Image 1 (cartoon, rainbow, N blue to C red):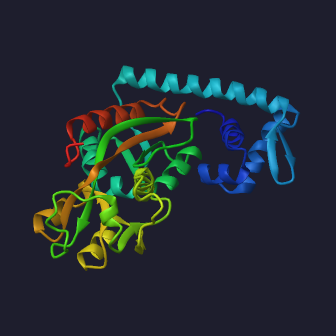
Image 2: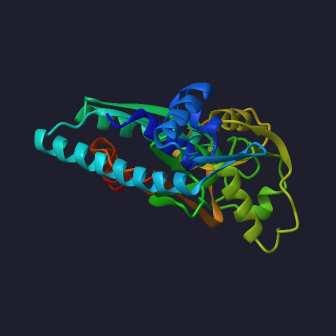
Image 3: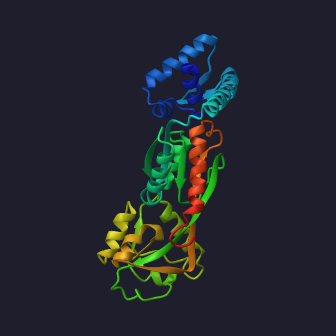
Length: 305
């Protein structure tokens, strides 16, 4: 509904990249360049300075960008106002989630949300925490749900709930009957860990660094794997031990194929929502975030966190 040239310009100006804007808008780069050039011809002035493969806003471009922000804010307010009058909640939303959350938390949440709002289509992109934050930064997704701290202060981060991490061992392991286990004790055995960029790996690394007695000793990493399922399978096969979210091992605990042992001291991390500061204009997005908040309150983690 809003001027397409202005939408394209606004995306390029926000990302300061024609390539990233093309990816975000699902357009070719020549098409993005053409739309921006048309807007420049309309105003009869350059909106971007292009030097050494980098772009920046001109003074006129900065002015257009500021007005575009206000225009799209008003457009969002109009959409919300009309939809509130008609009671309609519809549209398409894209969520990004790190692997643990996508596999063990979101299916039930999104299923319940879809049952309540059948006219809202939700697309899910799965990546590790670093990848999800990058998608939020580039506006590829509307909402991210991550399992590690977010360092970008320009994003809104809202904690959903705590998640408990535990050591997992095969039932025949010498430590399988222990009531608790310390990181120093874990270091004695081959360790199965997630890949670089994984929220779980980052949290374990920070936890290890806080243990003064073992801070100079590294994990004996036997394998690096890209999903919780692969990690669990390797531990079940006796290839090492690991630390995972207790939410990911409920089936294995019932089947007695794995043993979970609490860490001493205990290790928890937050599951958090992350989004752009100006992202929540559409009613469907506001409803999804509100629904997710309530879901997190009423569905505590299996570990009680």
